[in-house]
Image (cartoon, rainbow, N blue to C red; front, side, top):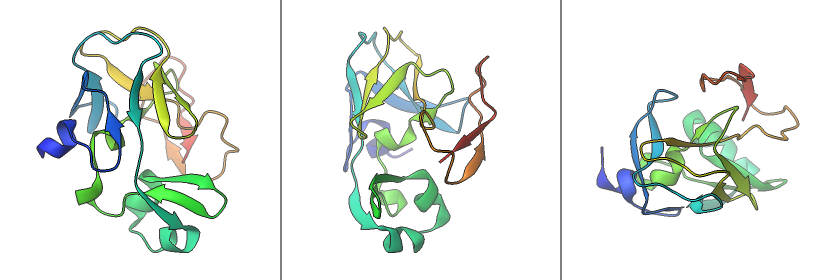
Length: 148
């Protein structure tokens, strides 16, 4: 895997206490390399600002996995694999150890142990629109279906 994906940043930010590695949830994930305190910012997403029309023209992998709506009709999105960085590999969990605040910032909900995968509930509070997707988180409280 490219070093940029492991620890690098193109548009986003990931804590220096994290790295990308193989995940049981979905290919790759972001993991703690050291213990991380509760309330720590561990990631911030970035990308190019795109309109709904531009998002529709992207390959489905990018329009569904890497586009985040900021406001109706406006998204922040990576448009190709060269723009992906470590923050883009954070996986969804129905029982997350992190939470998203202000749309683009992810902080820890509790202390995170070394080697633990950092996850967020990307479907939390969702109006159940968007692409219906089978959840792969494997948690005891898994909802089985999420909407992205």
